[in-house]
Image (cartoon, rainbow, N blue to C red; front, side):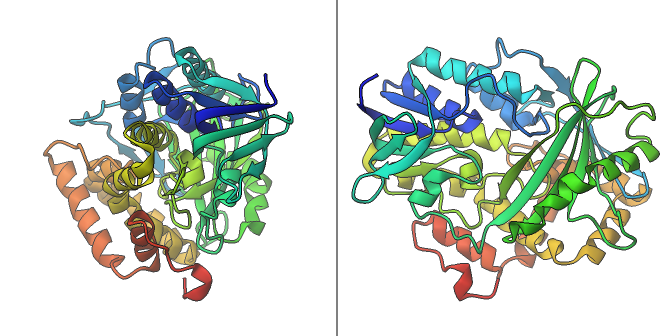
Length: 432
């Protein structure tokens, strides 16, 4: 390896978003450098559940074949604080299948990274340290001492992205932060459980827990917490994980004889894209680096795959307008949903008593059963592509109500400005 390398595109981060971007770019004939500080395979804190849209993107990119250790899942349970369950049905869409898959991130990320390299991307095992160039956007000096330059930089380096920091693309006072911790335990369940928890009477937990099938006699158990812009309370999630597991056992979501955890990991989340400008000039952010995580249920892999592909397509169509084309895709695909759900999340995180009341009401039998189909579409951001049905009517009504309720929100205005290519008002200058 020479002391100075140049590529058409430098992708920083080889998780799902970065590997998808590098794959599409390499297939399109671009010279791509794919940098990651980790060697593969490597583990990652995650629920390991890839939703229907993610499955469809894997198919579109011809990545579904050969994917190891997969297990199909369809319906999902939402479990209230008192153990009442609502079964959210899984239905086929016009643009996505009626199932998701469970695959450990150790296997999944290695599969995608290998596919990107097989397509022609050059993998560099190093950390992106110091930026290069007058504006800091020509490339990076890596931890190995190699200087890597490129015409375009794709930041796929996670929620605490170094690329977004160098590019000045984050308003830290606006970001909707979250933190999640997960563990594997020896047990077997049939359907995923998302659990709404009230550890203190009348005070809803500011997030949710999960118990997902993980194959081979294992379950993936985790707890995610929403933090707004203050990350100091993130330690609550790992501190309360064992208490949550006892709660899950007590209400029957886990077998009584569940074995102790064996691989506990935590990770930061940026949700709803709020607070992060996803593209400007020669820098495009994808996946978690762009904040592309569903504020309602924490899904991020489907968005990572889609945004990586979209950023690559935008670059291949011409570097000069790549940021504009990429923002236009995000505006069309994600703005309607995230502008509403990010605003709602910010509001609910400030009202734990309201959260407790809502979770009990929504999981009560008459209410939950009546809303289950529409809830599934709304919860999983599946309205675009859902076929005509009673469930779609419910979801469409919920979307309209959400738009009305958040029409004047600061988050909606911030996202609109960022995606239109304007400079959003910083949170420190307005009431958030």
